[in-house]
Image (cartoon, rainbow, N blue to C red):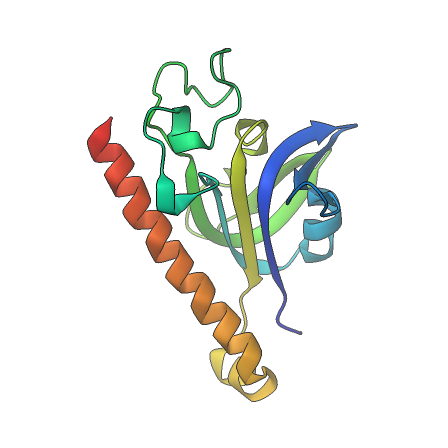
Amino acid sequence: MDFQVVLIEGVFYEHGGDYLIRPGPIAPTRSIRGELGPLVGLQLRLALHHLPPDLSALDESKWGGGACLWQPAPCPAGHHKRPGYLLNVSAEGTLQEDGGTWRLDRSEDPPLELPFPLMVGHYGRLAAATLVDMDKMRESTSAGDLGQIEALGSQLSSIKELLERMRQGS
C-alpha cells in the first residue's frame, strides 16, 4: 500500500450532496468525495478543523477568530452562541462513507462521524494520511515528502496553540 496524504485549506461549502472546499479565489474547488473517496476502507489519521484565514493577525472580535463566515446570522457550528469556538477533530480509524456521511470506524472507540456540516461556511483545513509501517514509509518516501509531513506536524502544533489561546479568551 502506498502512503497517501490529503491536505486542503479553504472555505467549506455543500453543493449537490457533496462537501466542497474552495482553497482561494483562483484555485479550483476540490470535492471531499473526490479527495477522500480513494481512501475509503483504509486506515488513516484525519484532522478536520476551523482555521482562521490569517493566523498572524487573528481577529478575536470575529467569530472563530475570523474562520466563521456566518456572522451575524445563526451559525451551524454555534458561533452565534460561542464566538471563540473552533471545531477541532483529530482521530485514527478506517474511513467509511455512506450516502454523503463520512465516518471513521475506530477499533476501541465508537465510530466517529466527521462533522462536515459544521465546516460549511467556514475557513478550515482537512488533513488525512494513511497509516503505514514507519520503516516501510522511510524506505519508500522521498526526503521532500518527509519534509512536507514534518511541516504539517508543525502547523498542527500552531493550531493547537491557537485553539488554546481562543479557549482562554472565550
